[in-house]
Image 1 (cartoon, rainbow, N blue to C red):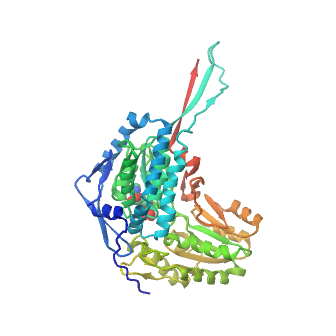
Image 2: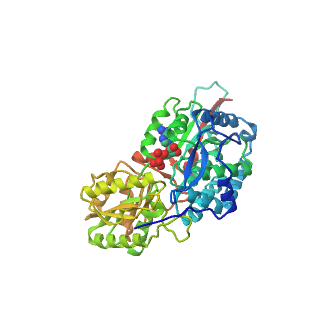
Image 3: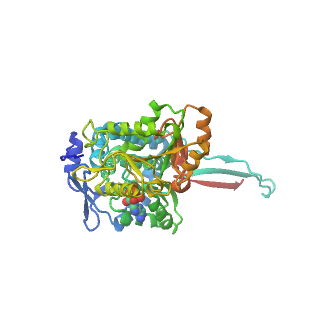
Length: 504
Ligand code: ADP
């Protein structure tokens, strides 16, 4: 299969102007500044390989400046004393601006990351706005408690009066991955701002553009200086420095389990609060009575959407033996329907992976599995001149000990394994160090909920996969992470509790 993708230009004047406006800078205290030392790095369109623009290569000194700005903003009356309803209005205004610029943001996201226009424009950019809307409503509903105590040793005639207040946790380092760049940033910024925190955002080096455009929109919305700072650059330099920084109070991280472990180590100096949303190897259990009309496209979307570069991607299907072969045939047909191409072409279903390096990594898993006896029912091909496309791939006969069954591939690759009894399916599903998500496909209500109860993961979907909303807590069990995003629980991660106990 050959695939020639010429360079694409955005259609909105805003996106083109953004790309043409020279090397992108860091945002520190609402000023756009060059990196200390003036270094830049290039960002490319993974579909065509074309250069998009240069980006400031932040250094530890820049991270220090951003942390100082965030620390100062915490006690700046413009932010500290902003009324909760005004904070809510500000979050709502950010959502409005994201929506008003949705076409432009979607084009930048697709050019930078590769994902299809439909995914950017109709899923992730609106979902980013929704994060700000959801937490806008929370800003004036953050409550403490008055607590009747049983303390009896107060002086006679006096009594104990105790209450709690909620305070922002402080300076947050938000470190985001490249798979859904704007959405991952929004999922951290919205609850952080709602709580009154200040933030240093470090977007993934592969995909910094929408975070930087969002920075412009934050200023336009009226966010006081220093409340959100953006330091672009590499994980080992900027990310590692922020996670070890003694003046950072909390790290909110989404990315690989490997880097998550490094952050746990780096954060120990001042015992930072951590929320970690890490890798996954999510199973999809297909029972013999599953509704094929629902399950086939559902399981296919669960793995192939965003070319499998989704932390909750349903990468391991366990299918009842009685329907295994028919299900594999069906998945092969679903894969064949997907048109590969440049994400900006409206008929494209699957764009490239984020980079040629990522496609190479995916190919290595498949080549190794094939050499070890796994079968490829469809796909398994790297295509495109720039080397970043990988065809949707269905693998059969993979063994549980193979690397492709144990490690997160982050590509459009699903393994299909037969099972006979539900207990066996559960044991397979739980045979992983990860515990992020799972789906169960059946028309049997009892079976569905029994399986949901038995699966060790943060989310279980029944007859659907990758259904998200800010109302639904999202987090990992086992080695898939610490803490939750979204919902009231997501806000908790950005708040401290202070107990005030008085004798009056
Ligand atoms: P992915 O598998 O999505 O590339 P990574 O975990 O490698 O995930 O990267 C996610 C984010 O973590 C990126 O912004 C990256 O720059 C950052 N990062 C990488 N290494 C480190 C590190 N040692 N410390 C802190 N952040 C890092």
